[in-house]
Length: 519
Image (tube, rainbow, N blue to C red):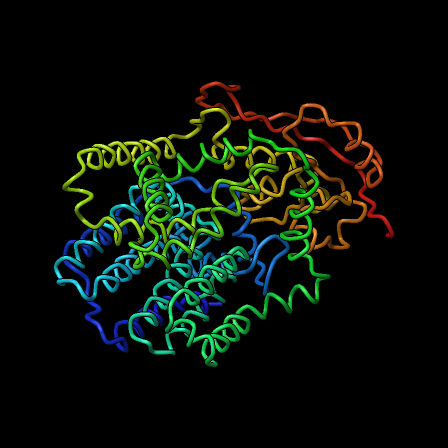
């Protein structure tokens, strides 16, 4: 596992030692990236751990070639961080900061290389500007301090862009192989990395050199390299009834196609979330860049590849949003090419010649700082945007109740949500194994794949739910596996709430004499 996690380090060494360009970094860029890295390392020592993070931490505790709902890179990343720093929030988040710093570095290098025919001072200023614009978006920070599959995805995505550009600049075919390896690693983060392929193909078809290249073995060897890197995920799916592919493609595809009518609310929700992720400045810059590319395509040849690298992902999800909900982070990798394109098309003059840029930059920085501050306040939430506070105390209360009913020898814990189950494992003193809805035969993502040990037969279970009254179908379903189900407690954690209820409530139900079907 450490092999894949160390790939960025080895690759950076390759870049700095084998490529024929000045691979240094300007003092200004170094200071920005180093300062951001240091601040983030301090910050994650105090930041709360989200439900998704502890769920992925369970991935890392159960190493595999893939998982039901994701490829394995996030597990390898967390595994390495916790191997060094232990099973705590800092260990979980550490490699996210590392990936973010490397992403910043390759953003800088990619833009500097794009200006290789310009004076070095101008190219370096453009590289610094790209790093600044990237870090004036909320997602650049969110996916540095919160471990998600998107953290390493952003890194490997920018590596693909870097190596394709190197091929365009130098004509050296080995860069295509490196791009293929990077693409394979990106697909080990999220399957949506495959959206890079049509953009790369079109970019190559647009230039005479690119068309000639497609007649050589190298692009196909690059594809082979990507497939080889990704092949462990295919093997895992083959041995697990294609569970991950079915969930990500078949099930979500059915969700999209089942909704036949236009749902404008999803489209406007997506626009709102992208405005938040990009911040107003980034959103305006994106609109200006897309307008420029559409209206002055021929004059913007240098940015064709950057535009194409993300347009299929961004436009694809925008179209999907007319019929179904699109999650806030699905479009984000596509914005890397946009940021590179903004700098290459408009240049550093966008700062000096645009007073609105400076005002927008300060406004974005202030909003990002405020978000960082609010994230640290225990229990603070706005309209349910807090699912992470209080779980250490709530877990202590649930475990104490478990002890009252006979301890782990007689009682196990299961929850209605995979995130709740992950929190209960993470914060219990001995990281005791907890379960989700798979206990009573419902699909519970990776918990379903992990199965149920035979030693639970005949034990009682404490079912942890956020509902004061279980719906009839759930009571009936649980009743098929237990003799009796009754509520025995409620635990609350106070929230500093704006527009919502003032506490997080967990309702605990005692289910007696577990009998799995077929036992």
